[in-house]
Image (cartoon, rainbow, N blue to C red; front, side, top):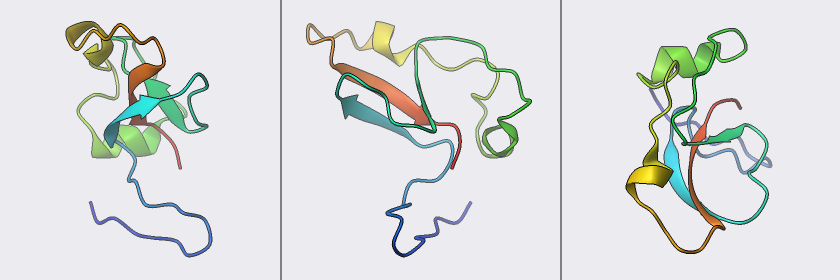
Length: 78
């Protein structure tokens, strides 16, 4: 999918993007990659753009870090 930058919102990451995040509170529209299951209802755009919409990868288990504020997260909604 094409990445669109919406001026004034800072919206640059497409749904399905996975990034390394540092912080205590995961931003709105993102989910931690901890191997959890997602229902497609409410995550239609993620289902269309990513193979991970039903079973998120458990990247936090694979790439263990001693700092609990470091997490892998996936964008699930705009």
